[in-house]
Image (tube, rainbow, N blue to C red; front, side, top):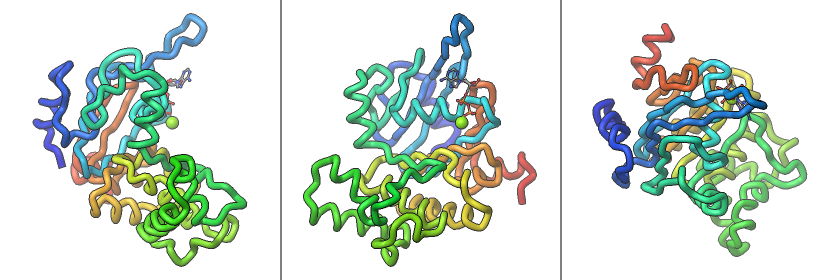
Length: 256
Ligand SMILES: Nc1ncnc2c1ncn2[C@@H]1O[C@H](COP(=O)(O)OP(=O)(O)O)[C@@H](O)[C@H]1O
Ligand SMILES: [Mg+2]
């Protein structure tokens, strides 16, 4: 895991291309929304640096800017100010077309509401991103099976979503996010629709993926879910309020 000093060094040199090892660097990232004359400052200068293979939770109360930040990190939106570097590329200056290309290649999304095709089998749901990418059928099947195996669902690949439990559905969605081998797995409130036992099951999947080298960034408003990550960034009022390793975060929150 990166140290506080290393992170401080990389975020405090505007304009400098970060080393390859930094998968994400934001410097003074700003996003404002114009609400008919009234400006909402959702992000007011966010500095975050994340190394390859880190497992980070972004936590904060409702309205703190988590979704806004996740949309920027996921290349779904562009900032009004500051820099965003993804794998050494300055994405904050990219056109929409460039952004879409980078997003498809680099980011695997997992959402609260699994977003699976109800009539398609688990295998077909996982194959879909590869259909859009123009990958051949044999290669698609091979890679989709491998992604399902990575989430321990290879024994359910011919089931449809309504034949799967909530946890199994979310694991299909995780496999689909992984099938393009993205550099980042980005999850927005991934346990928001799951009971606590199933949430623990999904946290085990993330832990397993992180321990095999996948960079994982999870957005959540729940401290006990955030505490599963190895590092927790807390947002408050559009700024980073704290950025600590798990043990420190748990201590501060009074979690066991
Ligand atoms: N599309 C939008 N238009 C206007 N204001 C927005 C928009 N999205 C978010 N906001 C505002 O920006 C702030 C941060 O919101 P958000 O990023 O959704 O926070 P969180 O995900 O932590 O709840 C809030 O004040 C919210 O009302
Ligand atoms: Mg949100």
